[in-house]
Image 1 (spheres, rainbow, N blue to C red):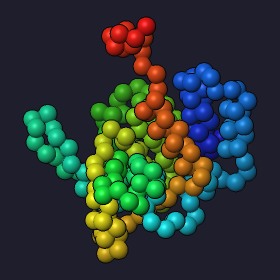
Image 2 (cartoon, rainbow, N blue to C red):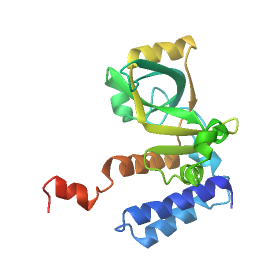
Image 3 (cartoon, helix red, strand yellow):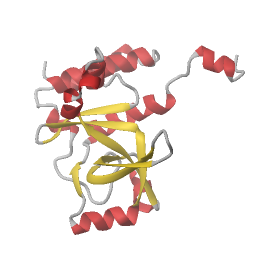
Image 4 (cartoon, rainbow, N blue to C red):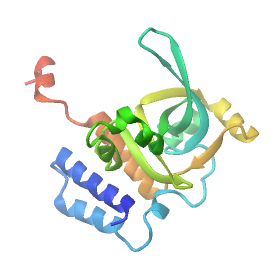
Length: 203
């Protein structure tokens, strides 16, 4: 089974485990759809980029800033995935983008690769806080980190693209877009543990 098809098949099984209300027939239809003869990598990404900035678009290079443990600002240059809805991306002053990491670099990192099963969980999209996108461009796979989000001025991003300082390297197809929505749903809406509910005073 091709790597991308295997990844989405495992992701479908993960969704079924996380949300038992998903009907088994729905999962089977999803798996059947991704096992069509056409190579799946050609169906995750749009053939032609749509006009404007769309949810799920990936731009690079972008400067992401974070506060470290000492309260100092750190800056990382990385690709960024547009998190907000396309309608919001047309009008909002600030656009939230999630930093994306090169999966090959993660594989080469001894500290990351030493954790048994960690990279396989990422590749199967079982990690709820990241989204694995295989072969985005030139056989380069990316890991989008939903917890590493920075806000960018919409006007700045649009101007940077026009100047050629920033380029869009990927737009999602309908299949890729709905996969993103599924991942965001899991990330933001997965049920909390019974212990947390008790601490909140919820019976």
